[in-house]
Image (cartoon, rainbow, N blue to C red; front, side):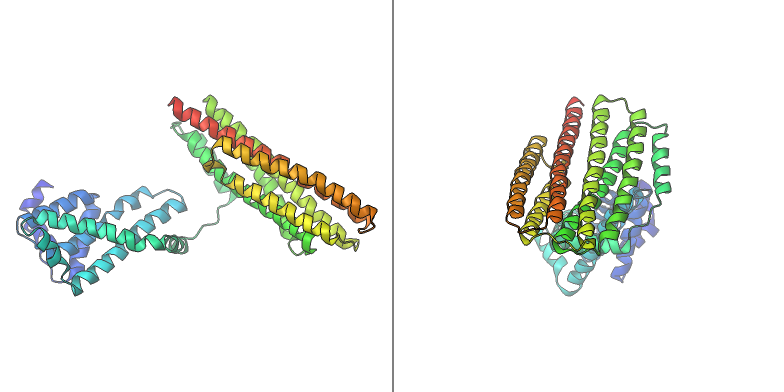
Length: 399
């Protein structure tokens, strides 16, 4: 940057403009070119110290520099996924909104005079203070609107449909790369995302299966069947991917973590199978003109709530200490076992009293079996997550 001190054209660009928008553009373009807001702000301070630009003009260049510094995030996001690009977009929106607010403040209030009054003999400090105030104030202003910024970023950059073949190609290319450092970590992150999606589908199937039994509404059955088919395909696809990662991974902790992931996938698939059994029972009751007793419907509602509580726990498994996760999951699974026994006894009493149809009671017994099995698989998944997180912590400690 040393030759710029002798460039009259550069000095004129940064210091002589009548329209604030030109100052913003100059600051943004220059910062984008050198890819360093620290350097460009330092140069602006040097120009101010030399008396070539006053604070009333320098602030507009400074605001432009805040926009121009986003170029580093833009370049870093090239070739990344949609979420990374949205993070970059939020960074850009943050600085554009802040610039808009502060330009308005500078044009209608004596903001710069107020800053100068603090430190009248130190132009560099004046610019530094404005820079600090800009970022802190913009952060405080936009903090309550974080969700809205994220939603705006999603609307501007919506998800693109990804073909399974393209995703598999990307995964295969990753594993065949000559640069092996970090491949397992990247692959495992991708696998976790796919498992989370698979678990969400299975959770929806469980909830809708119980709701079909409670309300007798079969409108969602066809959608559940499609999701069950998708879960089966995901189970096979994720298992193949894990096998491929195991073929190139040598770290014992990573290998064990991948085996735990296989266990999670298998148990999630089984939960979805039990959910489909529930929907099949609801359809069979409808076809035969049968109906569960009102007390049995209340019990199925309680089953649904317990299962969904456990599934929500698993959705946050990565953020829960392994010992705590196992404890909570064990308590829920034990509660499911206890209520299964209690509900069977209730049903036997209802049959003895003639309060329910015998054939419907047989189906209710099957419902209880699936309910209990779902609890077992949930505990298996919790144990696998705890084991996986334990391996991660052990690996980090070893490093």
